[in-house]
Image (cartoon, rainbow, N blue to C red; front, side, top):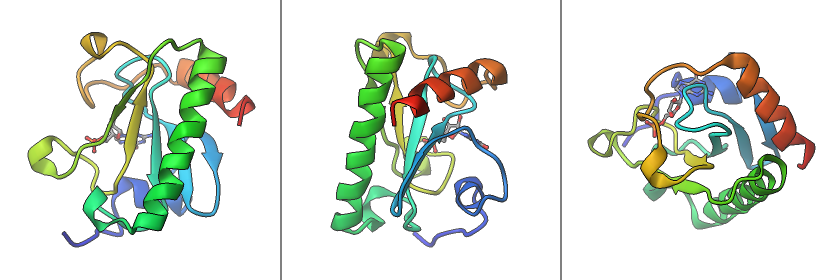
Length: 137
Ligand code: 5GP
């Protein structure tokens, strides 16, 4: 699948639109989802321009999973999350709405998730949760 340089996460990576960042390194960025399916819902993305997991080179996939582990550990230690749902949608047919590969880290029970990309969350609350996660990273 060809990569659209103007997708919303490409714009976030270029700093053209803002995000509540929790972590960044040379290969990855982690930030809060603005339509959270539970409090503390974060996203981890590779900087590599991949639409789905199939387009991500294995070394970049390893780096991305390392960031997933870091953010998940922070959600557990800083937000008191007892469990974290890790979700990753590949292709529109699976429900993917943003065509830049991303991992959802949702600190909740899978049966309690709000609707996917349903409604915008409370920005003050999201900002406060981002600050807590970022503090551990
Ligand atoms: P997907 O459906 O592609 O798996 O997930 C895309 C996610 O991106 C959704 O959970 C949605 O709430 C989130 N999202 C959509 N637009 C934005 C945005 O502008 N900023 C942030 N931080 N998240 C977004």
